[in-house]
Length: 153
Image 1 (spheres, rainbow, N blue to C red):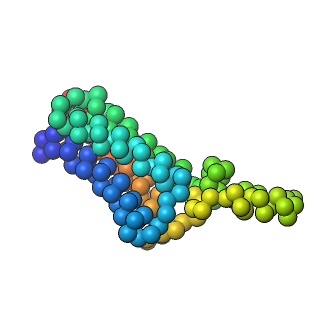
Image 2 (cartoon, rainbow, N blue to C red; image 1 turned 45 degrees about the horizontal axis):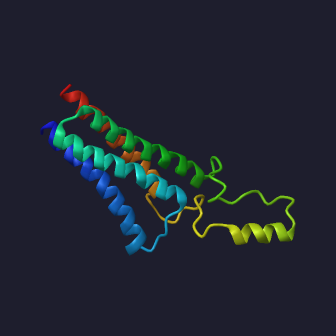
Image 3 (cartoon, rainbow, N blue to C red; image 1 turned 30 degrees about the horizontal axis):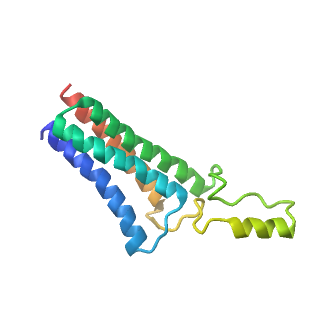
């Protein structure tokens, strides 16, 4: 398999990750949280840079694609920790501490809370959430990008 073919497969991977997310959203009815959206954007960078790298053979573009996949994976790791309660996520998509809040303050917090929270797991398979799968697959793809680049360097 040539480097160009590996680049095209990895580009297809990033496109399929976004299409899969859209399938969960539009077909499965699972609305994404803010961190879910943040995991998608780097895959678009990886897909665009990967396609251009496959067509042009420019190694720098392949590194950009690898960085895109790695970035999505790292955001997925962060999101996984938020879902598991290991650390707090962005205040705009997680619940805060309500200790010592008045009823009015609590009501205001509830009314201003986002519809989809980052600290809840809406779907999982084999004990892993979508953020977990994104982290594993995206970081794996980033490693394969680096392997494909080094393979012909």
